[in-house]
Length: 165
Image (cartoon, rainbow, N blue to C red; front, side, top):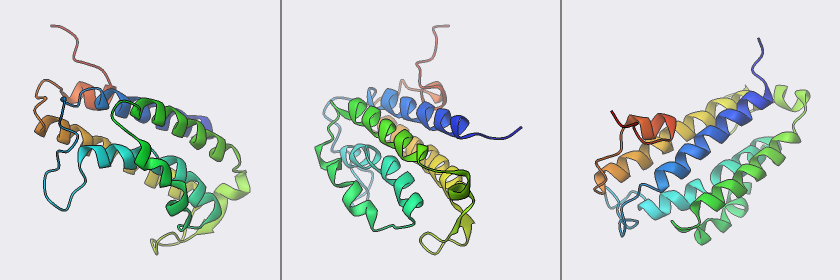
C-alpha cells in the first residue's frame, strides 16, 4: 500500500480541524496567556498556526526558506474570532500548493535549514505532521493552563468533547 497525496492531505485536514476545535476551547480573555516571557502568547500561537503550514508546503516546493517571511505576513490579522476561517483558507492554500507537486518533485532531494539531504516528500510528511502534532499539543496545554480544565485527550486527539458517560 502506498501513502498517497490524498492520505497526506486528509491527515493535515484532520489536524487543522482539531486545531479549530481546540481554539473554541480557549477561555475568554486569556489570549494574552504565555507560560514564560520568551514564549508566544496564545494569540501569537494562533497567528503562527494560521499561516505556517500553507507557507511550508510552498517553501519545500521552491526549496526557499526566505519565502516564510512573505507567506506568513498575513498572520497578524488572525484573531481568536477568525481563526477557524483563517485555518480553512490556509487549508485551501495548502491543497493548491500540494497539487502542484509531481512525483519528480516529491523525489527531489533538498536540504532545508541544514537538516540533511531528504526528499521533498520526506520533508513534507515528516515535518508538517510532526509540527502539527507538536503545536496542537502546545495549544492544548496553553488552554489547560489558562483555566479550561474540562478538556481532555479526546479534544486533543479526536477534536471533540468527551461523550457523556
